[in-house]
Image (cartoon, rainbow, N blue to C red; front, top):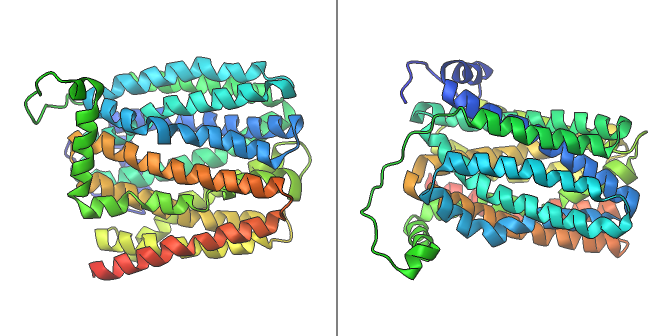
Amino acid sequence: MQTKNHYTAGQISSYLRLLRHNANYRRYWLSGSVSQIGDWFNYIAIFVLLSQLTGSGKAVSWFLIAKHLSPAIFGPAAGVLADRYSRKGIMISCDLIRAVLVLGYLLAGDKSHIWLIYLIAFTQEAIWTFYNPARQASLPNLCSREELGIANGLSGASWSVMLALGAALGGFFTAHLGWRAAILADSISFLLSAASMATVLLPHRKRTTPPAAFSIGRLTGWDDLKEGFFYVRSQPEIAVLLLVKSGWSLAGGILVMLAVFGEQVFAVSGQGGGSGILFAMRGLGAAIGPILAWKLLGEGSTAMRKAIAGAFFISAAAYVLFSQAPNMLWAAVWVCCGHAGGSVQWVFSTTLIHRRVEDRFRGRVFSAEMAMLTLVLTCSIWLTGAAMDAGADPRRIVLVLALLYLLPGIAWSLTAAKKQ
């Protein structure tokens, strides 16, 4: 769809103009935003529940592993479905299933039910694995090319705001009303998300190639998967972009450490409050990161590649300082800075992929990206939990994780230099 409005990346007015003039995107955005708030209610509630039942940092690690392992397993199939069937239908179905599924957490009342928490987390994320590529692949069908950068920026900023809001409210709910109230709120959020997505009008996607003859490969999706692989292999720039989020995931164990620092190192009154503060600051930093980068460097492809490289070094420096923070105030400041860098990597790499990938391959490309990201993230989280369980100092663990950001930072600096 075309628009007569002028959009400038990094300006709040452009975000508001997009929401005002593109009603279809507005409903799509609202669906995701409501669900994201509920997701963070869920995270804080489970962090507190696991802390109550086990008091172990490794238990949080296993929860996050269960949450992030599914995309590595189901990602390829999810991408094939997103490119073959109705993306809108996939998203609505996933929301409705998750609305019922998360209620299963309410059955976990004692330590003997920890397996149930992990099982539900794994299943919930498996369903999200089918939801995410369908959602990501739909965005360019709702926006013009001029709107696309703004839409990605708004999606990243609103994810960050919903993280901040959801983590803060989730911490309040859990601390004052109990973790069960937060789980109920999460279930309701999926119902509201499905209702909003039902009003989105996604254009019919025309088949660009004639239907293939019947074969086992076609029936199982194997032929589609191979086609997507060969497409990425023939597009080196796309292949490199798929590694950006995986580079961030090398230090993904920091997500465990935010919960550990919030509930143990810098514990505040009421369980859930400390985690809520740090995750809220993560959201705040992620909201402002892309805006600042766009204002300083511009919105061209070359500028965004340079910003991705610099963002890794910003994250490294921020989390080195976080590892030595003397109190919650300074810890919150450095979390904000660290995730400002992380958001630049996420939003800019997503925008560049949207600009370059054909619609018929988009679901498979995004599912491949998520599969690699979560595989690396799962390994990082497992190693972090193992280090915690072995009695390693939490501050030293964060320091090591922070230094890992230097590896992709150096690699991307070299890549950006070659593009000049």
